[in-house]
Image (cartoon, rainbow, N blue to C red; front, side, top):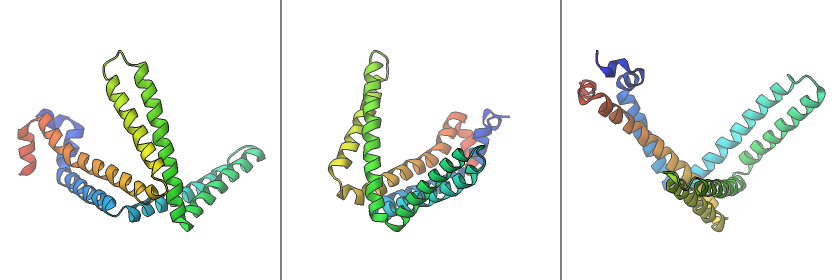
Length: 194
């Protein structure tokens, strides 16, 4: 029995290799389409977030009645009402929703980048601090770029960022079976091709 057969992860990859690669290729194509048509993909992001907020509102409403006191129930229902209002707003006014979510993404990039930059300076004598600094500076730059290009950035940013994320996820799915074959030997990879 080879080490390839002893690893549950490698065995799963071996059994689903073609399917994993096919899903990865489809995701890469979907990511490219999201980048090619950023307004459509930005609208899709807004609609998905809107639906998720409505679903979360329903779940919060149901769970609110499990609180032991009326104050907790009322607070839970108020939170559910806010989520419902946010979800309905995004679904009924998607262009304004794109703008609002773009502002949130820009602020998140700025905050994340600032925190990572400060953290990198604290870990400066240790190996790897430069990569954390680089990550922080890039995040700040992306946040500033989005902020300075508002409102026009709202028309392309969410779709482009979603597309990049989908491409990276798809590429990972294509590369994983190849990487597993390298770790567990090329003979195991040749078995897969047969």
